[in-house]
Length: 188
Picture 1 (tube, rainbow, N blue to C red):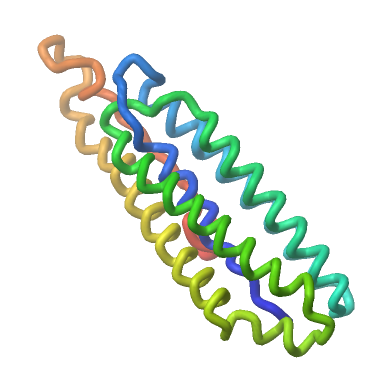
Picture 2: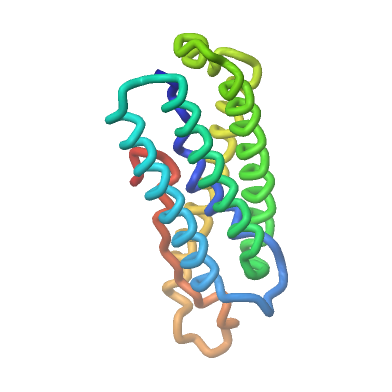
């Protein structure tokens, strides 16, 4: 059966952490929004994965799974794009995440388009060996790496704990944030 990429949801969350302007949400608010988006996407992907695993393999089941997966990814991307401008300290990672998510959605769409014209179940199972399948795997790996980097960057604010309450330290440098994006299936 075709193995679909799962780990990139957290990567999308990382992308949300990077645009500019300090007049936007606080890092805490931004991280919560991203974490909620990622959690929702992961939950939706887990649900269609469970449905796929409990279904008798067929071309139509795989196609329906692909359609649902693309819809979930596209909805996530749209929500990520609609986020308020991230805090300045998250701008770079947000931009990188957004690019990675767009690449992942495009790559998975290309695999789905191939799957939508194939009539043989075994041939659909070999899609990951095609150039489009390999591109989707690479896009997923990149998204996962960005997700992990974003999670680490946000959680590094724990080091700021020592500055909390010091009046001469700017408020944004006193903010301590912790997130768990679940960048990989093992992290969820």
